[in-house]
Image 1 (cartoon, rainbow, N blue to C red):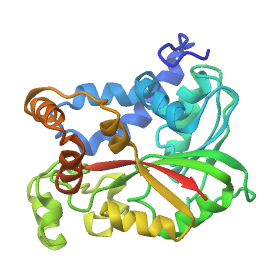
Image 2: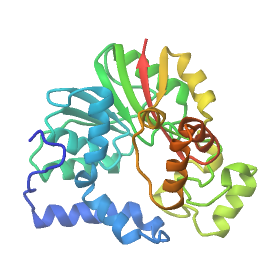
Image 3: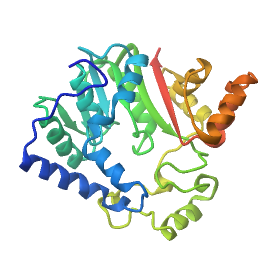
Amino acid sequence: MNRLDQLPEPALDAERETELTQQIDHWLAHMTWRPDFARWRDMRLWQERYQSERLRLIERYGGALAGRRILDLGSGMGGTSVALALAGAYPLAFEYNRAYCDIIRLRAARYSLPMPVLNGAGEALPFANGTFDLAIAWDVVEHVQNPAQLLAELARVLKPGGRVLLTVINRFAYRDPHYHLPLLNWLPRPLAEAIIEWRGRSKGASDFSDRQKLSEMHYYTMAGFRALAAQYGFRVGDIREDRVQRGEGSATGLKGRARDALRRAGLAHAGYIVYRTFFQGTYELLLVKD
């Protein structure tokens, strides 16, 4: 199977599906406040079915998928790893959360995939120098203990010219992508965390409670992250900026009308830079090792 928009039918096993559902639900219980919780939950249960756009992005900026050995660093619940394997790649799922590793294995078992799943921290990758030419790391940088050490390890395990597709949270995002509340990132962290608690968005007594509070996560301005990555030999490109410059992308409503007006006025790129600085929640970046 090498098409990005098709998946084989899974071999459903009732006992396995029950176990997988129970394990995933355990990690979603603290997010029931989401107005789209039912749909969001379904997208977690069948995460591999919602990866077509991401796989196309990886293929566009990282090269052909079939036959490629790809490091999926911080693979979460495994949707991207499983979709990559079904597209003909050879992903290695590397995940810090042991419970997530079990979920990945159960998800891969739906399709009888013998996919390697390793548990560990991104700051200490158990791979030889120059092992990979492509890595992905979505929703990872903000959660690790030491982002600088993570970048150092990625630079070490990549071949010269190797690429990383990753995301970074905007330090001044208008709406925080973790707690879905506006203006948190413009407030002192103690005040922001008090508002999170007041609005019932805290991780509370969930299994996430041993992880970082907002003040302990790592958010960056674009300039700040580029400067950090450069210390480890990476050139940083903004994938969304590239799409704007190509005249690609779509939006509806007020955002779409504003984008179209800026394009007609020849100001699409300048408008995007303003949007990225003050509103965008998450940067999608391409790192290339010099």
